[in-house]
Image (tube, rainbow over all chains, first blue to last red; front, side, top):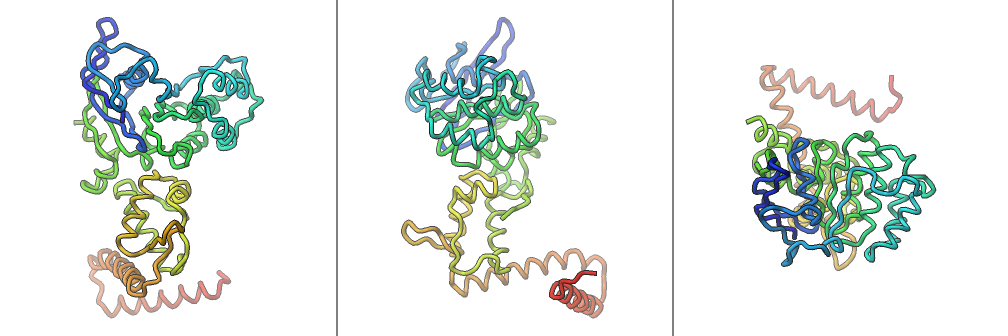
Length: 229
Length: 131
């Protein structure tokens, strides 16, 4: 389990996170929702120990997040991360050389799953295929947690469907996923937990099936109540 | 197998309802093997935890059973199967009632209309020729 405990973060004088707390379990999909600039990416960076937080604590299992956390958690960004002149195959090789946790069998399966051509160059990829390559490179690592930053943002509907299919497939297996998004439609049926953020705080956290079961509300109904109150 | 999910009922409830419909209509037969939880999740594009929950509910209700490590199967229990069919029929009638009641049609007229509709549609299906 990843536990984010009362974290604060300032960039200069701008307060981005003002005491954020939530948990994300293995085998569950946790979705961080909020408009752009609400600090979602900052939270993911903090979990990866890529940005120092001003206050609070993040733990995984019994340990505090550290420089070695990348061995157990992977961050899948929403932009190109590989060198543009590389092909997909070269990017995969690069990851294999760098990470002990690289799982070549799953990587090959992911190529087929996303219908990507190994020979294609990173710089030639569409936005949708860039997102799929990023997911491939992250999902191919044998880690416990996958952090996905806006995987659906700005890409075509068919790519979005393909990416959503990852969550119902065995490719995620029993790992934990934390996903940030401001577009819930693609994954409303797929997520376990929802964390609604605004102004650097958690406004509401709930299980999607629970609000349907106990209150007869959709995730979007709850969002409307919380954000338009 | 495909379900058009609504957004306000729990997904697992909708999955169970779908199975009940397929059992009552004979698409799923008694003793028939059903997909694994993983397969069902991929097929219906739902969270594997939700598929697990739906199967747990169905197992507890006696709709499906699992022997050892074998794939789960649809029950052969006549009483359970009968109850599923009956519940589905009652539910359909209830839905019909809520729409027809406010119109205040005399019962005889409704019954005649149902009879007429029912025969035409059954014939239409059986003939399979269309218009």
